[in-house]
Image 1 (tube, rainbow, N blue to C red):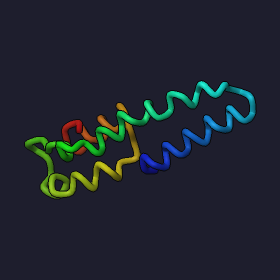
Image 2 (cartoon, one colour):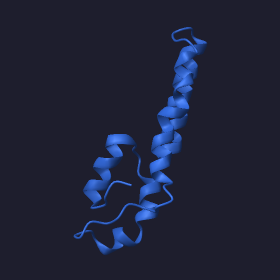
Image 3 (cartoon, helix red, strand yellow):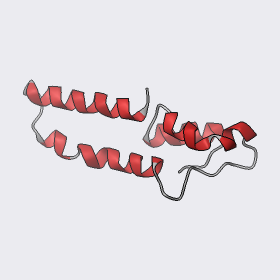
Image 4 (cartoon, rainbow, N blue to C red):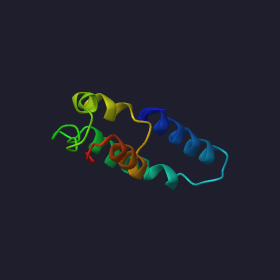
Length: 89
């Protein structure tokens, strides 16, 4: 699942909690901030993460596309990048 779908799922869950009366509207106030840092990393104007010295050439050449397709954010994204031999964006 890509990041946009993960965000949609998160927002739908929060809205459902509010509509069912299980949470106050305050849970929605921090939603944008929670996801803003992830998007800032993905769309960093400095470019895609730099490849490590031992990264496979195909991964290095396609790192921008790989970054946008990874099904993770936060620490899970950092772990996947490390496994691919890419530095954190």
